[in-house]
Length: 115
Length: 110
View (cartoon, rainbow over the protein chains, first blue to last red):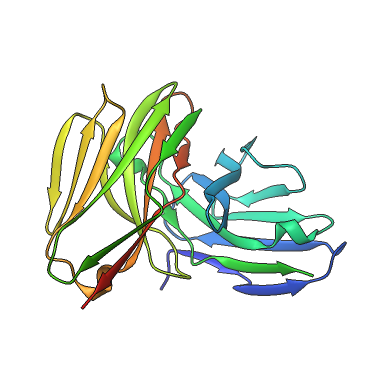
């Protein structure tokens, strides 16, 4: 069974629609992250959470919001989707601590298309 | 923040060696990671360097020079399955976030 799961895996939506991407993990990690990946730009951090009560903006948080419902669940919302939010979205988790054990583990990704 | 540069594409022959370079500029350094990402899939962890020198793990090795802001990933005895994108990422010492380079797409040809 996968340790980090994302739903949905693929989604096509229209401009202006609200959409939520969900991430769940069974690794017991405190830290969770949301990234988007665009061709030629690499992975860019949207939001991150170091525990249930801690939410932080990443480098490209405009147009996005998040919710950390539990240690194991971290959701990303697009309140009003726009075409330039078309991308591959990854959730990741890490145990914390700053050592090599703080490696980030990625979910399988959600491919989002906004028409 | 970090500024991370790596080549966009590299091509090599099966059985050969390829070296992927990564240079970075950072306000606070807490380690450098290499990830492998096959097309359409999630990145998977390959290696981690925090001290200067070479870390070897089977066919893959990673080198770090902190004074030069430089790392490389060495892939030996290339196999077709090594065709993938390789991501260099630097961890910030202040908040332990990762900043990623754009990735190097390696194509292995028979």
